[in-house]
Every structure is written in C-alpha cells, then in structure tokens.
Image (tube, rainbow, N blue to C red; front, side):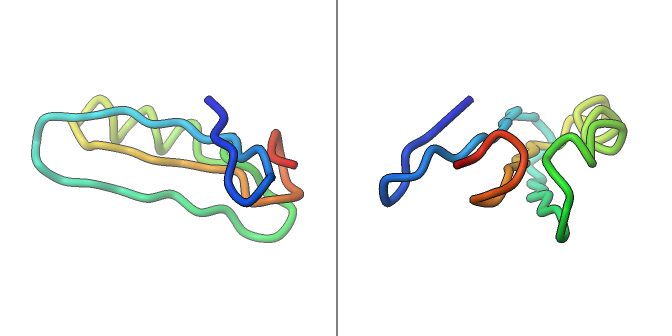
Length: 62
C-alpha cells in the first residue's frame, strides 16, 4: 500500500492481528520492507499486528 506524506509516496504493509500486540518493523540503510518478509510471516502467523515500511528513498517509497 502507499500513503502520501509531505508530498512523498511511502510504501508500507499493515496486517491487523488479534493478540493485542503490535510490532513496527523498520529497515536499516540499504534495506526495504522486504528485508522482513520471513519475520513478518512468523509474526502474522502468531497473531501480531505488523506494520513495515520503506523509508523515503528506499524500496518502493519516493
């Protein structure tokens, strides 16, 4: 999904779980939200709410 913030398109993924726990995944330099795909799948399988995003200038973000 994309959201415009301060004129930039930010790519992100969001999955709402139902265990009441939230995880925000933030990549490092040269990474992208795809860096966390295996971890994201594990967290979703364990019913966590997960948000991952591409910082501006990385991955699918402007």
